[in-house]
Image 1 (cartoon, one colour):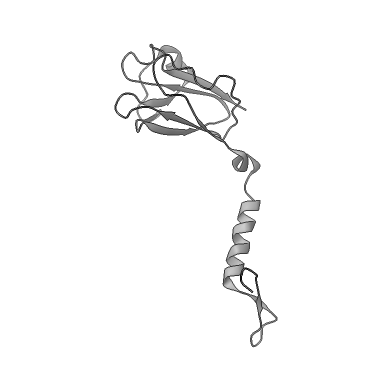
Image 2: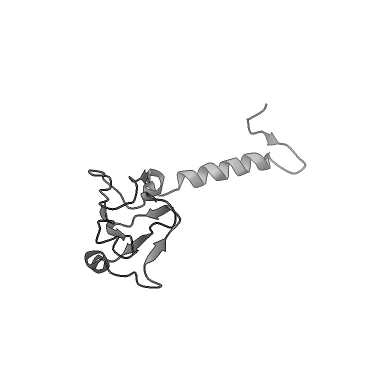
Length: 135
């Protein structure tokens, strides 16, 4: 009976589930208990991260969704910043702002406004900034 759980009869046992069936049941239970937001989170690959970046116009994001910023490594970075830093195209705050520079950077959105810039000199002022509001 491949693929079916069997109860094993043993001395002094009233029926013990096999260990593989117990593991499978545990995995299914964990999946059922995931928060609804996590189960529904989406991953969005954005248009290339470059000057005059436009983003996904009209996309509706939720907290827990992920944004993927793609660009040639070494040419830009992506920094999750505060509204103040975003508005001023300021330098990232060391130890506070998350700076990624792999060329394939993934950020998970928090509820509310999320602000991103390229912190290379002149890049943010040249349009490399993006704000999204996650419901």
